[in-house]
Length: 302
Image (cartoon, rainbow, N blue to C red):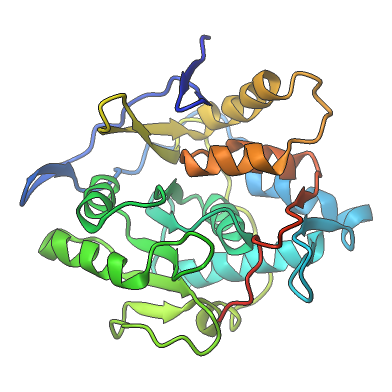
């Protein structure tokens, strides 16, 4: 199998899911990813490899360090609880296996938790690139058919909540988003649509810190990448669970040839900005501590 590069980040060839299209102002976009049939043998849920397997002897050891207290030290037990709480919250709010959840945040604790929670319930995760204007953000959200968004507001390099609202308004009646969880500074005054928008901690903290990982099938949709071409356009590439597992191995082999070397934070951040989650997931699966000395990973949020 060959690997090509896209914006300096390795991309594994993947199938393009056939999806229904709806006509929107400005063009036709796929409405959503249709659930992929569950056939073939079952595989272990990747979130169990990233979190649960480290709870035995390493539960109190750091999974994430960002140099800030009290949120600067995230132990494996704490990471497990955060992932399970969000998985319960998303499920209770109607997110199901095969649904698409968009993560509109830079690399930080809550965005890592969001990706692992999606994996845990069998939802498809997709990262929104930084610096998009409202039309570009609307185009991508319509393309993937996201039913939920985990977003930040002025957190790190997160796009403002007002920008997200304009993008969702541009999609109009065809918008599938019914839940927006916003990570924001304590006391932030933001425009919030009743019934759809909620502050992240106000919702997630109420849920149980335990959620059994869903059984996965290798041909089930797992991850969606909006890959950019040289002309500034994007195309959607959907990875199955099996393809994503191979992506975890191959990207690390290519970018960290020694195998057991620590993946530098700068490389994790570069991959994240390009829409790739495989390097971060692989680091956690190996039990590595994700470290950012500047503390940008864990802003004190609401």
